Length: 284
Image (cartoon, rainbow, N blue to C red):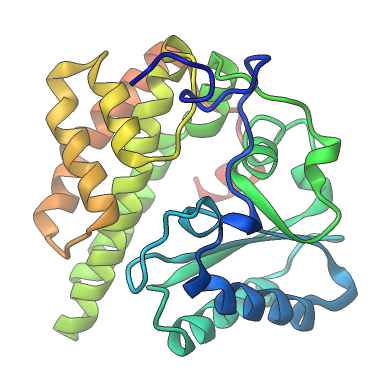
């Protein structure tokens, strides 16, 4: 890789450049995006402040029948459980209607939380740099510019230790599924989700030293490998599974018993732990 700011995902001033744009959405996915825009408006009405795409679709790298649809909606007020249920139903309906996508998700937040000091270097960064505006006024205008520094590393992925017990519970529930096909599907979704999360965490562990940003899992794994060669094969394998997941229970066990705990310990040693959120106390 050439050592230029653009290749490292930075602008001319060393700030992380925003990913994606609606112009990069592949033609096959434009009907999905149009439907998502219309249905988000129908679902939330005047409560919707703004909505965003993120992931491979706005980056222009989505693959038909393989990529998921990732949405984020900012409401004028805090979302309730009924709002989250409605968003899940919206994505499930799109998934069933459009074969171009393979699953998806919709994140919901209140506008005030996304702009809060607590979220400034986590979800604020996510919106400002990793999300593409779809509807409404772009919250990035009220957020700072971001550099790939240790503060950003800590606040984006410094909570892996908290997540691992919750992941273990989800894997256990998948193993208890009565229908084998349902269990296989759930494990496949978990492998994709956990693989991506672990690779991104491995990348942000070394991000300040590398001084750059990428959302390409393979690039992330290669960057990490340059600093932790003894773990390179595991993280590169996880990058592959992030794009081509299987329902292999052994993969999930290895994540929970080996790679995940090691990465959580090393992350805490290098960057410390993420600032506590109210939901962390409620979950403990």
